[in-house]
Image (cartoon, rainbow, N blue to C red; front, side, top):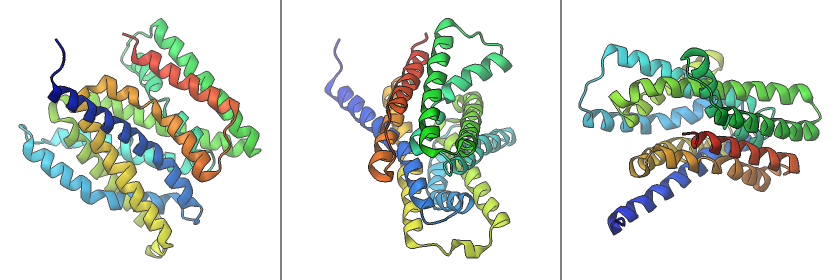
Length: 302
């Protein structure tokens, strides 16, 4: 039985939202690299991004909480505090630090490894078996990353910087993988949008607090371009993608939406070439194809 016109329209809207969400998340590294051209540090830029995002997530959280059937308890706040720390504060901070040293394209590819890290962590700590498909996916992903790192090493000439950037962004991916594992424990009970909103609010407070501890207020004396880029980061690469992906999942389901995320590395490679004059090499293209192939294999492992 074919889908009704209304259902088809809903699916089309869901697909559009999923693609726009992938584009928004992919644009973040480009905006960060553009902001770094004005000599702003990672702590100030991250506080700017999260501070401008905070009002939107407060609104999102209030609306989601009013619609929820169950009130939040003390243990729920503990869970969301941990999720906010791992998934949105630590992951973002390490990512911003790493973008000082590596290209936006390599950063996106490294972050794209988080599904492989979920598999490895689940095997180590939850005793979940790793099948042949998962092993194939791991091999494809890490071979691809090796090619992409080699591309950056060839261009940068400073192996120590590239390896430091790799380590920082890999730490970001690891932190996000831990967030996803914890998210699965509470999202079914509390609701995806509410967990995302409150966890991000906590991360916003942590980022702003970190800035106030490490930097004087005079550090906010920045060119208007940095504020414009920070606002773009908040709206188009933080708030909008979170909402778009949540709405896409409600229309399509998590599986199809996760597959649209494979567009991320390709979009970032293109935007890096277009806006940052980053060189596109054969190693980078092959690396991206292998990483995407590995993630697709994992997505279809069942």
